[in-house]
Length: 248
Ligand SMILES: [Zn+2]
Ligand SMILES: [Zn+2]
Image (tube, rainbow, N blue to C red; front, side, top):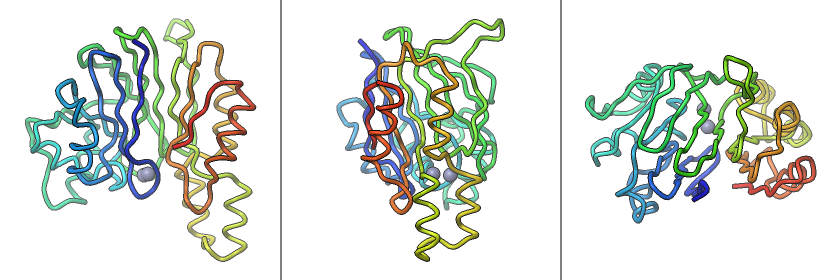
């Protein structure tokens, strides 16, 4: 069965996604309250192998401690666990906390997961390249990174075909400049956004730098309410790639 993607929330107020391959489910991010995550994915819970978290900001990690209470294993870098600990009143249960490292692959059921470094103002943020042996597909998940240097090749230079892409498309330069001109976004915040988040222009560069021939679906995630336009972004990326695009 091809990889299925479900989204409960996307954007700066909270992120929560689930990916399934017919056998195992992985949760991605936990930036909304635990109760909503547990009820939103209720039918999938028996097949959940774990929760992957990219970084410790609240809109991605808020309910990690509570989900660990609910028996969900959590996979994140040491920096992310540290940041969760500093931001919340309770820690992730130690025996549910599995420390991962950029560049070091690990396996959860039918999923092989490779964390890769992301560029964001958090402790040790990562993105994920995932392979499902059940779906025989590759999915790339990246959010909260203002820059991406990856081209998908093995160390031997063999191409890794991407089938599903979930990529942050936070803002467009034009919309951000407009927000600054209208006084909705202060200059300092503009600089922070530019050094923390992925723009429409960056998404286009990233997609053109990589081989799109095997891609069957692109999901645009973490779109800013102030500086983004989901429908416009969806149309532009669809026009550029010729692929079906969903903007969450
Ligand atoms: Zn975020
Ligand atoms: Zn963040």
